[in-house]
Image (cartoon, rainbow, N blue to C red; front, side, top):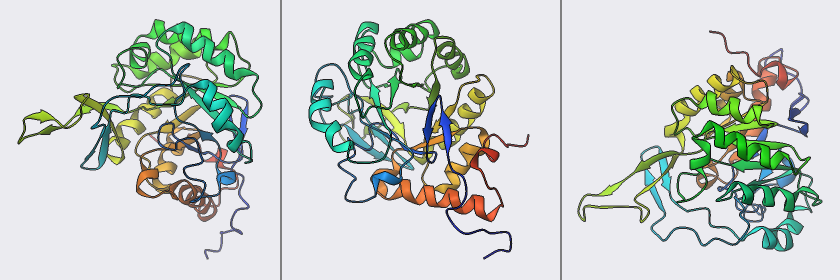
Length: 312
């Protein structure tokens, strides 16, 4: 042990995300962690900073037809199409399980119209066990809603205002990288009242079966995630951190603690782990312990003293 190292787990890892205080900055990324129960046999959910569940819509959605997932070099293409159980089944069947754990639950919400976003926020606002909302205006794999809101600053602002008008929960808006200037979109949702932003969602891509000369995905295009997109995500987080005053949550290709520390140094106040959960379901805990070790090794008592310390 280095001389300046302290006892493990004595560092302060607590972060504040728009009024939602997390015990540590490691969150799950929506769409990659189900409703929590799928991973409860692999990790202790109590140790997570927050758990973001699979995107929820007003009504149940079956998603896109298969094939919906394609592995790519250093990443994965998916076109699930926001398959989910719908808000009522989530509240009745999924949330009771999550209430057994001491972890903030953030519900990712998706609508095809502004009014659907508003109704979802209203339905979830006064529910015990729901600690925050993540507004998905960035999914590239649906015909209506999603990215069509996330690429237009005015629409992004309008959705954010509609959600904020009916809830006192912290509202995080998840941004798409499939835009010319992501900082402009971030500023528009901050002006609309967002308490934080998370970025990035997947990059739109495709893959072709050269024997059949057909797309591998039935949806033709899909969202690229995994380590291939990390440099893009890191750059965009850095740009957005400089452009807004609300907290920024880094997402995109984080596979280990070193990746997470990069995002923190760039200015992200928290990170979300996505595709890595499919490779190793213990990744979230490995990242948490790795961040703690980094702080100890570098003599940093409080994680907030690391955030945004990039030297340029």
